[in-house]
Image 1 (tube, rainbow, N blue to C red):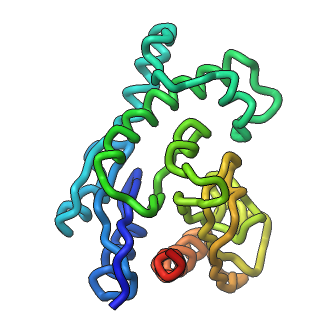
Image 2 (cartoon, rainbow, N blue to C red; image 1 turned 60 degrees about the vertical axis):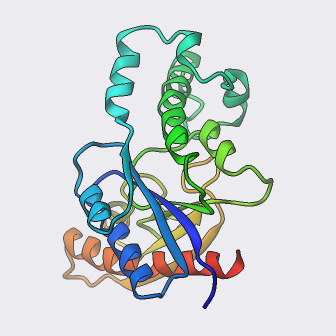
Length: 240
């Protein structure tokens, strides 16, 4: 039997992709052990799924942190000691050129405060791969650089509800449906500094019928996601 990689997972909601990965681990379709599940939102169903599977959990409440940052000016003492705004500004590709310097600075600073808390939890585990299983927060270069510590070696995996590079962003299935596509799909990719721009690991497609509703498209897509994500994690495990 192959040795198991240690996988960390981050979620924001119901955790159906997390459940698919848990099931694949139990069925020995993935040579992996999930060592933690973290969430940016308290009380979500995905945390219950993890706890039921005896996986350790933690929460970093992004909304609370961001609201706190909005109430007062962010001081240097609030930021991680290793945070460098100029470096982050030079690397970030998440916000477009129309954003002001103040908007960019607030975005990068507030997210770094939250990401440092995530990292504090994650660093207590021995982890080979970080899987974003429905984690609805973009990660900044501050976080990415502290996980992807070896140049060219990606350790953060994400699933996107469209056939990238088409329809990046938050509503891949909705954009696919609105455009009138007859083929939809999902993509698993590694995370880099851009929005859904990292190297593609795997994809699955499905037909969209003339009678399909948006809900039909989402349902078909989720079924493909639950197949694809475990396959891509196993691909990583075999190459590890």
